[in-house]
Image (cartoon, rainbow, N blue to C red; front, side):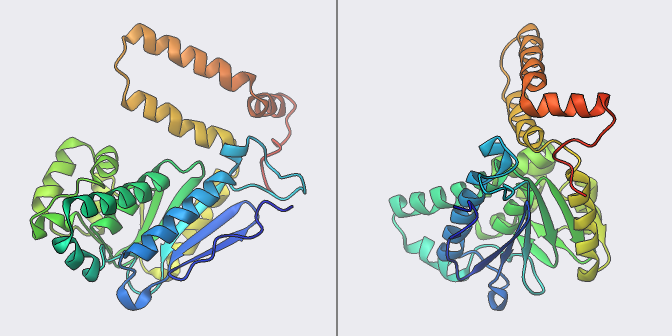
Length: 285
């Protein structure tokens, strides 16, 4: 059976798969792709489904039928805006919810952001218009983000008397302590220039029509990187982030990690292809 058959059925999010690439689009254009419970649940389901079918998880490039497992994931939003944040009805309901109900809602959001941040594939965002609150959280979880020149991002929760706590770890990791703290307090929108300067995004293009060429360039570039190396780079970074051992122990860890990579099938293929002056088996035409 083809591993890509029978994908989850969704209404507010669309997914297309071509080869080893997946494109997930927020498709609630009339609401500026605001996050409601259904959209969040659908996104969580798709992130889990695609992660399970990634090269990084499966440890091989193809399934038993020769069909490729996933290596890249592109996230975008339909219409003028990427994501306006939480749906107004969901925000209204939160005010009437019990503490336990709000905790469940927060757990759902955490699953959303962690599912994207820890996704085994190389993830790319194609962002236009606004990315507010949870929308900015999604941006922070991506590996590479290209945005249009009219983009506006905000950790806008402070304007409502709350804070970006659930998205906080992911935004903090992307921006660093001082910038995260300032934007959380400020809670106002920043434009493309500041987003680029602070590292919220990686590239700026003029308009929506310019997004795809930039995305394609990065997709082509990532095809030359070992797909399991992409996944393990996330593991390596996480361990650096939370390292609390000695410097000597850290050096020992990196030696073990390097040995593990060099001894892997992908590492052996990469080293052999270099010495034999041929393309590695994960490189596409």
